[in-house]
Image (cartoon, rainbow, N blue to C red; front, side):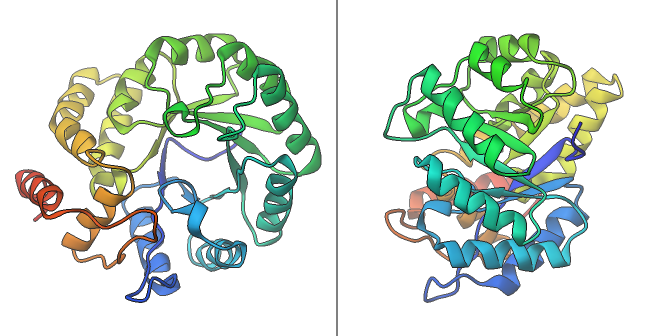
Length: 291
């Protein structure tokens, strides 16, 4: 079993005023997240605006962050090209990544047979632990439990980030995969419900602002204090939802900037949060005592 822990943040990529990657702020943010209880970090995933980063920028991020934190770094290297994903994965591992997050191919709409072949080929080509990332709302492609179960038989396919929002599908995935195959919730609001049906933890966005509370919720559940876990879940439920009122990572970048962590704007085709969105976020951050 890989030792990635239960609370993983999919980290934003900070930009300066010219929308160049701000590596110094990235390091500071990574160190803050680790200090607050994160057990691993996903770098250059969806939340990290991976699609608009160059390969050179991604590789430097892996290298810089790996040098400055003592938790595993999982590199988001998935594309809708199997060949490019293998190239990205090999280069990420050269830069010190501890594992790879590989999203299901978007736009191509592969069927289940094709999905299996895609992941199997990558796993055979890159000597790295792999986390499958299922997010059909973004990719137009849903990997089914039976396909995940077949892929879980491959030694270095070790985990799944499941962000379909379908608790029945997640239950089926947990049921069909071995105990040492780790299923993570890919939706913050589903973290506790997912753990109830056997998920191991979460790959989080909201932990950017509420890491300590999420860690306490997870630890409480694991320790059997389900009442305390439920209380924290309900307290955080509004921030879980409000950080997704428009496309991620627009709200979480706005929230971090409000909290004094200057992660900057977003690269097109994403634009900064509207004043209405900022008002909603500000009220919730005040309500949680963070502002």
